[in-house]
Image (cartoon, rainbow over all chains, first blue to last red; front, top):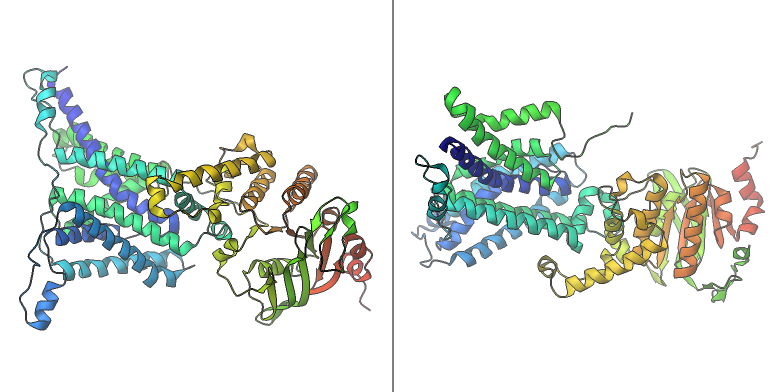
Length: 332
Length: 278
């Protein structure tokens, strides 16, 4: 086999791992959309906010330091301690759960039985509020997120695959962080699926996603389910925030990963968890392979920015409900 | 048929001719009046539902039967009168709390979880009996696992009872109408309700499906001793099932008693056959 073939394989593998990261973001959307019919515009900001909170705890930042200093004329920034990553993650998770509780209490509760567009508008408001609130709480500077996951090319894989392609091939270059992210995402998704299939609460989640009236009749409280769903979405946002944050730093652009989730959702369907995963993988692999095979040699490169949207558009024409979405059949 | 020997004049328990024990009232409706704005849906209606009996509420379309069911259910709160459940005046409830009170129901237009399998649908009926916390469930550890297995066993018994073993894993959205109704009954039964409400259980069924459903309703009542209140506008269906029948028309009660008594009641005959107003 020529070395080019192995480069192609390497691009494919990298595409798969990038796809996992997209899936992770898309998953947060799907969870909330299924359970409450809300397209949660704030999902990307939730990932950013979770990552900021994690860094804040880890570095012992004083929340609202800027505000405190401005009001009281003090000059405080840090508590003077640092927290181990594990505990910082637990605390950040706690904040995201509290966030889920407050969203239900302050917003969703008052919008029961409203049109989806109104709920969507509410999440836009929520997104901008959180963006400002996050900055106010933790500052708007670019932060480095390091919870101890090694980064950079994995030498072990590189060395042990170098023999495949002959003299011109130096082995697969795979980022260790991506490999970790893939494993973590796989574990997360598997446990979410098992949880929803084999536990009481999981079954209640699926029940609410399916039919609100029937769910009420078997004694499920919609409001507590919404708290749980937003809590899980917050948890997924935290994981996505950690992975993307470790990769490219914690800054505003992190929240834009939500935009990458959109084509994934169009492809996989808004209501399907497997759809979010497969959609993410197709987009990840598709955009890398397209760039490698067609984009770079023929179109002058930089096709990764638009390829996903184009693919989603083509899909919309032929299969509007997505790969795994529920087909909408109107009775006439 | 023996079922028509029900006694209406005593608060004590008695045994029917077919050997079922009927206890004192589990639910008493006292002078219920329900209005929607200016429309009076239910006007000053009183009746009771006794433990272990099959109680039917019948009446022509628009008589207020479904409103009545929703009052029993706690979904609507009547403006006047009170509801006694297990001897106590019931306070207004939130919709999901009703199930926790031991009242299970089926719907006129089937409300199943269409994307979920028969088994999962019936398992949701067990939710009120499952108490373990989120963390234990998430780790699938200790009590959560034991509880899941026990409840699963219970659900399997219901599946056997309703003869739906062959569709255990099928998403209910794909099942024919009659079977969906049966799954919905199964989900309600899974809650081991003290009171089972059936909203037009035979609506839209063909003759064969109606016979099956009647048999299951009788079996449920006889084998589990479940108290059943059912709504039906088709009078003939009810007469073979019910111990006692309440007849409603235009929001008022026009008859109450055993099927035979009700059948010979002139007001009931008028309501069903129509009477010339002159």
